[in-house]
Amino acid sequence: MTAAALLTCHALALAVCTATAASYLAVTVPRLAPATVQVAAVGAAALGLAVLGADRQVGRGLSRLARVCVPAYAVVLGAVVVAGLAQDLTGSLGRADSAVLEVLPETGGQHGQQGLPSLAALLPVMGVLVSGSAVLTGVGPVFGGGCLRGDRPGSGPDGSRRGGRDTAQDTRRDTVSGLVLLATGAALVVVIVYLAGTVGARVVEDPAGQLLRDDLPVGEGYHQLPASVQVARAVFADAPLVPFLVVVTTVAVMLLVGATVLTRLPVLAAVLGRDHLLPHRMCQPGDRRVRLWCAAMAWLGAVVLLVVARGSVARLLPPYVLTTSVYLTLVQVGMMRHWSYGLARATDPRARQRMRRSRALNAAGAAATGTVLVGLLSTWPTRDAWIVLAVLALLAAVCLIMRVTWLYYRRVSAETSLNGLQDVEVLPAQVRAVVLASRFHQLTVRALTYARSTHPASVEVLTVDMGDGSAERLVETWEEAGVAVPLTVLGSPTLEVVPPVVSYIRSLRSDAPQDLVVVFLPEHLVSHWWERVLLSSTTTRLGAAMRRVPGVVVASVPWRLATPGQPGRGGPGGQGAAGGVEDVMDADVAARRASRRRRGQGGPG
Image (cartoon, rainbow, N blue to C red; front, side):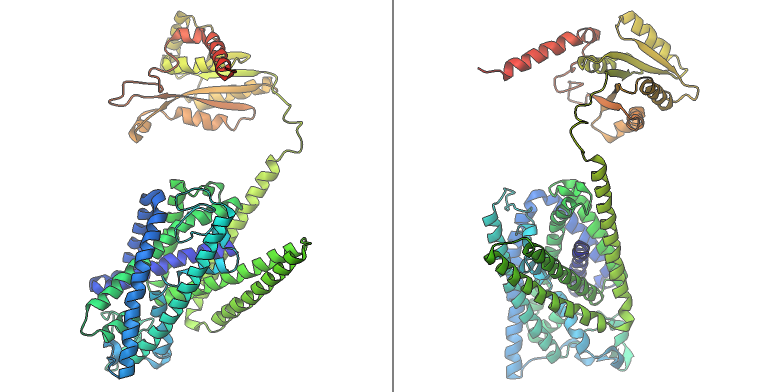
């Protein structure tokens, strides 16, 4: 449940960041106001592509951007706050452009909604609400510090492994940074909300229907400005550059936070993959396919949330706060269980005392976050009750997926576990090699070479008569070459290749159940996608069908096709190991010589 809540928090954070950035962009480009959802979706996709394209340098790049964007954002907004408070004390503070509008009484007045966009505007500064709070509760080492930098667990910005002391230093540094940012953000939120009320800024959830001008709704043509922009315009009425800087820095930091979310997702997926809550392929956060999958899932979740909320930050923030409260409460409860588990086994008095203090601290945190969660649920507006149900349904779906994944891996582990070492000593009675061939060419020669070099008990070649005369020509060529390997021709009444071959392999297994059958499949390695379309896919289908037969091993024999400008074929050494029929006849001799060379190179001296 905790992991599901954290994943949902990431998707909601990406949706809130992109929606806020789109709403601020609409301040400078009013034509974008009706297309907030589309702009936010495109922004999320662009962030995902940028993170994928940046590869391993994205962590250090985000760290450098954070050192520039966050201080710039704090300086610009701090200047607005200081100037606004000074003007308020001197009585020269102006009025917002929306002060002439009225709010419908049934919406709860302007003060019920003013603080909402301010919180959205300050979300970058309070971006530690999820990761920083996790560090404060003692689970930050899961990410090994460096959450903002996007590093791997237990690694530095350069990808090198870091020791426990370095990780602890990173955690303490992130904790201090989180406290400073959280305190600064809280102070800015309070002052911005106060100034918004002083200048008469009107910010509501549905401005088209809740704001009135001359007792009439303003309509769909009205574009509501964020509270921080309205305050900046009222404070710096004669300096339009300052509101523009507020917009630019806010958009930059919002995009920075969105990119950080996408960077952290592969790290989180790796942790969950190691705990068998996600597919094990997620355990490689540096793999481009893993990062692509995480970015695609985050983008899809963000787009769904944007469409449901119609791109409104006011509708996205309450579910984000609710999900974060659920996550923090579950984290505190989980840490309480962790300390209780340690107390039941610890014997050192100092360690037990430290665990008791930690458990008491987590209990207080669980009580605080639980109270906030209950308060949110009890005071939720009736008209927005569907948001609570949607968030809870999303959490339940993610939890169900993780539970099913964990049960599947548990079943696989139970099925593949060893009860003893007696199975290791069991060997097949003999190994039989089967080579599939359609024509007598270099692929067939190479497959025969590989098959005979394994020293099986028997080797035979299979081909299927498709009624076009190719089987007869292969038999004639085979006899003329004098290859000392039997050739078996299978009939196919349905003119298919896979069924008769699979049936023959099954008959070999039924005749000698203790034998191991190794099937060598020659196949082409191509450099272009269109070559796969032109070449036959029979080898792929044969391999997939025979892997389902018990006691059968499928061995692929690749042949790399030449590309323009590359004269070599078959392998790195030019024509490859199979250069003619004589290679098949002397395969045993070549294998023995190679074995002697390997022993000579590995010996002393």
